[in-house]
Every structure is written in C-alpha cells, then in structure tokens.
Length: 79
Image (cartoon, rainbow, N blue to C red; front, side, top):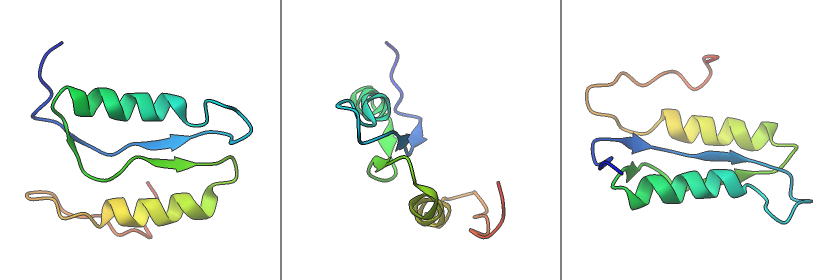
C-alpha cells in the first residue's frame, strides 16, 4: 500500500448504537489512514442515529481548523 503521508483527514463516523459494530466502518477507515501515514486533523467522531446537533458541532469544529493556504468556510454556510 502506498504512503499517504501527503494526506490530511478527519473522519465522521455515522451509525446506530443498537448495533455491536457501532460506527465500525468509520473507525476502520480512520485506523487505516493513520496506519498508512496520513495526518489526522481531529479525533474520529462517532455519531448515533439522531445526530443533527452533534453533526453541526463537528462541522463547526472541522471548518474552524487552521489550514495553511486554505480559506476557512463560514460554519453557518451550507455545504
């Protein structure tokens, strides 16, 4: 597998806590990217089925990250 050291990422894992493998796919993607050298910008966030408020909080945090050479978006702007 090639190095992903040039990549920066953040994972927002969606799931339903009724299942044993709650957000399992997102967690595996996060681990895989990190294990191949990508730079994690923030901790993998797991959101349960009714996640609207938590998503807005994550979005605000993500869009507020300092990014050299990138203009930050207004968190109130729809994507």
